[in-house]
Length: 445
Image: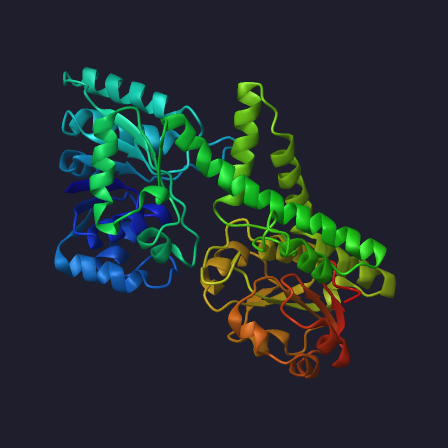
């Protein structure tokens, strides 16, 4: 099947590469010349396990091609996936300008009966706006307007995207007619999806399903962080509380870890967008708004506590060095968007401290955000980051950090303060090594 994909960002590139892997003839449109240059060399412009090999394989096979001209992609596909960015505007609502610009090109150039599918995360009602835009563009070009619009939201976790695509927990088809459903089933036929994994619903329901899933996970994270803060204040241990919770089948074990908050390209943006959608519809999303507020405070809390300790001890931040392990918002990615590490680093740098950071994959992306600060530096290894440091903040739970003994950390540091935002170290081992260990809700562990 001939398929077009718009956008070679995280969602679009995974979609285009995996559809080519399934045997489809895919053309992917991307406006960034720098990104296109990297892609032509088989280099993924972000870190995702397995993507470089898959990209190179599909380019060599000729099943995947890239173009700088959206009109080329528009003329190609019988099914066209919109995977362009929908970044947040200043008020938290979603910017649909990239999506609607692509719709104009599609309306002018695409085969008259193409199926146009939103893969991007878009507010409820976007499908109707898209359909109207396509009709307007087609008629302005003197063409028949027989396009159909569907929604096929992505449920990819960064760091596990290829597995999530090829072995999905669920696939959602938001359609308004049987032909659109049949075409989407044909697109994904090689995956041999079971009926239990395939959900067919209205376009509006599909649009809301992505926000609902992400907001639910964000709420769980923020609730656990509130509980961890309460544990700190009352002498409870959040690890014990979590164990009691997860043995309840109604609660389960996932997304119950407390820490320094969530980040990334999805949760913060989607929760804010959901709140704005509720305001626009006259249905206030109080729980989602609370999750967003809690997370905003949590991401900077460890930096606040560290500065508070220094103030009580009469130490000037300008005389101190803080090591940060992890810049990415989660392991197995180089994505630092909305990452707690960046929030903490900026707060410490503004206070005058020196920050020395290490991340196995996100050093370059992190430096792009923090390099403007003269007192920010990158370390080549975790050991180099803590050498001579007055304090250590662990902001990402990379596997390599789990194997570093607390005693080695203590020997390398000038000071002894450790703020463990991801529960990487054993509180017992850390304290036995002489570290002044702090973690949300684990003070009494």
